[in-house]
Length: 214
Image (cartoon, rainbow, N blue to C red):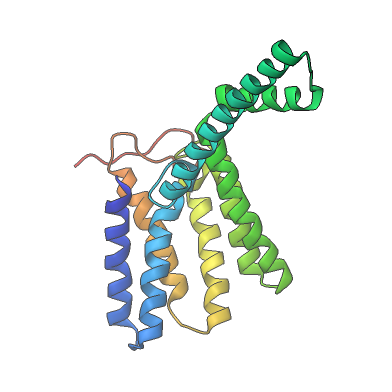
């Protein structure tokens, strides 16, 4: 399933929550936001609609490393052959930049940037002593390094996400956030179960993908 499809399903879940629970404008915004994000969050383990902007930044960083190394190496080569000057520190820097540009994949930069965001969230949770926010930060910082459709696409991750949603519900005192968060996340797993690749719901206990062919 595409990110837009998951987001659309999340939007429907959020709208249904707005109709089911006593309507308040600020509650409606929370329901729609939580449902939409929950429906997309399982795909933080790879390029997704959520991380699309970060992917662009990571690609830009990779290009900057590569061309920065090339330009620096060219300048150092000119200084060495024309003036006989050798700058050890800058030469090492040029080599490191070139290696980062040629060897490191863009995905690693994306993962690192997503993890930085998770680290900031974790720090805020620690600062304000909000367990649910710390859990959310750990989730965001950890999952980019997992295999796609691995641990994030399991019933265990769904339970963890529900715990985060429950913490947010208790913090905001808005009934229904836990249900919306679980429903949004579950909708992602159910939708992916309908694809040929399927979902490893019980990984790592049961490592085969579960598929439903329509």
